[in-house]
View 1 (cartoon, rainbow, N blue to C red):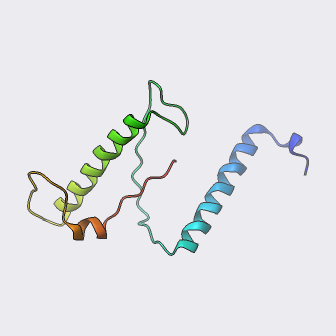
View 2: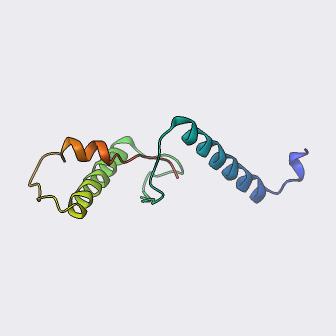
View 3: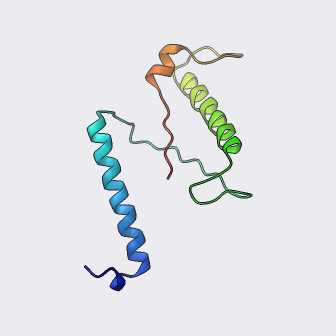
Length: 102
């Protein structure tokens, strides 16, 4: 196939489609099962690049999202409000957030 004849927008779409297929194959092979509900978090502005950002910013955002995630789980499960500390081991093992680059 002559790649020179493929428009740039089509190349990007093909790349995205292949990455999706490869990701689904890896997921199937791993035996992991994820909820089909996604929570998308975007980080923009400043020194943010496509696919990259300063590590300290990413770590802070990950911790913020993790806290919101577990607090929401506890609320939905009608667990008593935690004034501090981490969620119970049971909740951490049953609900494990994953991070992927969108």
